[in-house]
Image 1: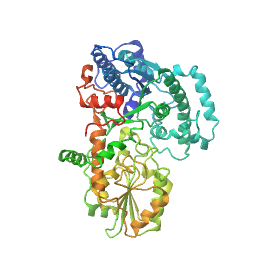
Image 2: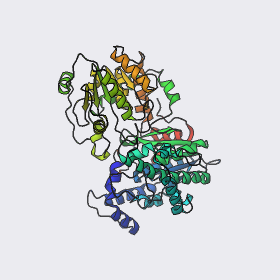
Image 3: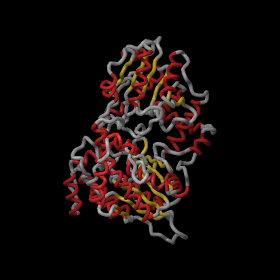
Image 4: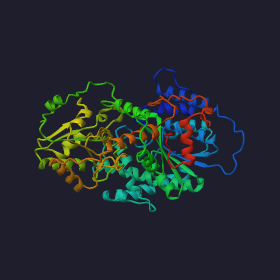
Length: 562
C-alpha cells in the first residue's frame, strides 16, 4: 500500500507544498521526487485533455458512483480517475469523497517509525492539483463535520474517557468502530495489533478518534450524494471499512478495489466484501466442478514455477539450500522423527491482520503449538519466518523470531527457528514436513496443490473451500496434532490437489486483472501512465476495462472470462 511512497515523501514536504502553492515546476534533475511530481501532473493533464466528447445523453437517470477516496495517495487517485473516465463512457456519473484534514491523529498514509507523524504532511495539498485537473466532481470530508475542530475535540474527549480494555468494543451510533481497528493499527505499527502493549493501545486510540470522524462524515456524504454504488480501497482499513459497512447496511452496492501480487497495475475487485475476502461463492461453485483446460493448467503450472524462491522485493537473489539432507544437518533434524513445519505471515500484512478464526492471533497459535511439542519431545517443529520480513520498504517492526524469543523462551530442544534471512528453501521444508502448519500464509495453498498435508489455523482467502483441513478451535487443533503424533496425519479429501489447482486459477487468472494502465511500481512518485488517450477506455477496447466496468455497474462478482 504505497509504503515507500509515503516514507520517502515525508522529508520533502516543505518543498513540495511550496511548489504546489506557487504553481512553479520543480527542477528537472533526475531522481528528484519534486520534479517527478510535476512530471506526473503534466502527463495527467495531457491525458485528461484527451477525454472524448459525449455524443448523446444517456436515457433515464445515470448510475451514481461515489468514490470514497479518503487519504489515498496520488497514484491511487489517478487510478480512481481512470475508473471514473471509463464509467462515464458507459453512462455513469461519479463523485470523489476526499479527506482534507491533515490534523487527524491517525491516517492510513502514515507509519509509526516515519516521523514526524502527528499529521499528514502532504495530504490534500498534494492531491488538489490533480483533483482540479481531473474535472471530476469532488467534496472534502471536512464539509460533512460542520465545525471540524470542534468535532475532532469531541471525538478526542470521547476516546480519552475509555479504559484501554474498552477501546476495541467501542461503538458509535451502533457501529462497532473499535472492532475495525486491527488492520489499520497493524499497518501503522508494521507489527502485530493484538494484545495491549503501550504502542498498540496508543495507536488504537489515535485511529479510533479518526475513525469516529470518518464514520460520521461518510454517513453524511452518503445522505447527501445518495450513490447507487460506492467504490472503496481494500475494504479492510478503517476509513474504507466504515464506508463499506455503512453503505452495505443501506443496501448500496460496494466495490472494494486493491492492487494484487505487489503489482500496482494488477487489480482485484470485490463486491460487498473486502478484497482480501472476496465473495466468489457462485464463481467457485462453478469452477470447482469444471476441469482446467490444458492451457489453463499450464498457466497455473507456470505461476507456481515462477513464485519467488525467497522474497520478491529483495535486491539480491540468494542461492537457496534445497537439499533436504543438508537442511536436516544444518538445523539438527533427524530423518526418523515426525516433522511439523510452521509457516508464519508478516505480522501486519492485510492477509493476516483480522484474519483470526481458531486463535486470537498468530502468537496465540504459536504458543499452542509450542505447548504441544513440549508434551511431545519425539516430534520436531521448525518455525519458518516469512522472508518478506526483511524487505526494506516494508519497514517491518514485529518480526516473528523476536516475538517468539521475548514471549515464549525458553523453547524446548525440539523447536528450531528459521529466520527471514535464512537461505533454507521453504518449498523444500514444505516437502520434508510430515505435516505443515499455516495461519494465513499462501504456502498453505501451495501445499494443498502439491498434495502435501497442511492444517490451516486462520481464515485465509483459500480456507473452507473444500480442499484444506481447517482448524476451528484450539481444542480441535490439539486433537489434530495428537492424531499426527500417533501416526494418523489429517489429510484433506482425495481430490483436494485438483480443487486447489482450480482455485488457484480462479484467483490468479480471473480475479486478478492486469489493467495495462500504469507501471508495476509507482513508488516513490515513479508512476508511469501506460494509457495516453482516455478513448482507450471506451467500451470494446479492452477486455480488462470492460470486465471491471461491467462488474462495477452490473455484477456481483468481478472476474475475467473463464
